[in-house]
Image 1 (spheres, rainbow, N blue to C red):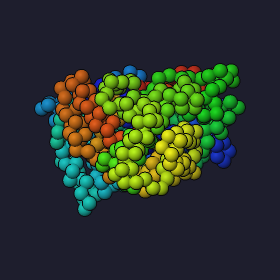
Image 2: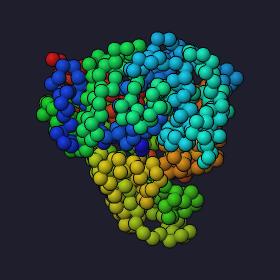
Image 3: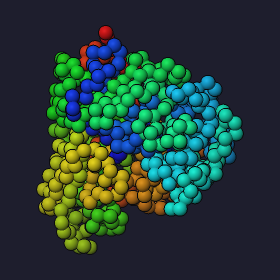
Image 4: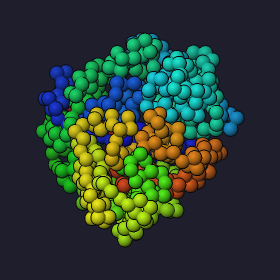
Length: 546
């Protein structure tokens, strides 16, 4: 969807879709060519927003922010949590009270120290609706959050549950139990910000000052984003290279051509045209491993015939059962995607193939026709069914295939609706201006079912405050998520998450399609390719022969 980012740890989990293209001089930059020392040129897409961590919810900006900032914790390849800036995070009172101790000695790339205020000020800024940050909902369980969502809120108002005890101590009081809080603490929304971010937010978003593995150098819009290794970084992700050059593309084919020609070092977006051949291409190194990304499409409830009511639910279920996911996966994804059986990815502990109601995710044209007829008995169908997507990504073929299945099964006019750029597409999604269904997906921000479910479908994430772009609201589902967050163990929480998913399978606020593998390719000179818990590339591990 947008973007937010894996495996479950304490019971909770997040999303993204990637885009590319060759523009200008195919993404090359004056200072960092593919042949430069140990600067790695990688595929990138133009960020949808300035580089504020709390407003970064798509892949173009997400990959950049991940490299520039360091939070309280980091995640390993299995979804395990490790302290980063945090020295300890301790909970009490049934996970409604946390005390965070910070390590000393951390500093931002402008030389100013990273303190408790750096975190608390950033969290308050993100949570305050006056600042229009897309990850505000990540703070919904902290005391005072609801007050910050009021239309007339003071832009300087803060979360009453946050207290800076001293430079290295944060006291956090929650309005409800939240066992996932320590897991969320490594996501974009929880990154610290220096004082300069608030003095001139516009300038900061174009030239961020950070505390992560890399230091920002430049952002040439629609061309490249450059960064170099941060010599003062003290965390778990020390870079093995000297820096990264994110080349911005508008076509995955252009990026892949540059890779094969030796003008790009690495891409983690393989174009449809290369899926059958990239693993046997002797001119490069190929990678194809299980991942945590989910692919869906959303039918917003404001569309005629698709309200959150009996008619809308019948139509969503009928459309879902019109789709032969297995055949599309074989013919278009060529072994790099697996048909969805729930709303999660296989690495997440709550993932299940046995959920009640998951037959709506299976191809059944006769049942689809029956459900569509029942919906027509409530209100006769009129118009056409469309699915919008960004033409600078890799969705064209599968969106067209789905539309063909819907058209042929339900005997209605169904068509794909390309939008020229990811920026245009995401702007319409984020502002709630979509007039059709639209492609969506999720790459986890943190390793928990919470990231896939609460951040995408809970009411607290609707109305522009999070990833619930279709504005789905069901109190029964919300209550189940609250029970999961209050559960004393991952096993107990997973039961509630699964019960919540069974509600989603009836309502289908988004229609699950496939779980995507982590795929990538590099030149033969590059080594160290690895993937994180969600299937994203570990850029700090990349290096290349000179």
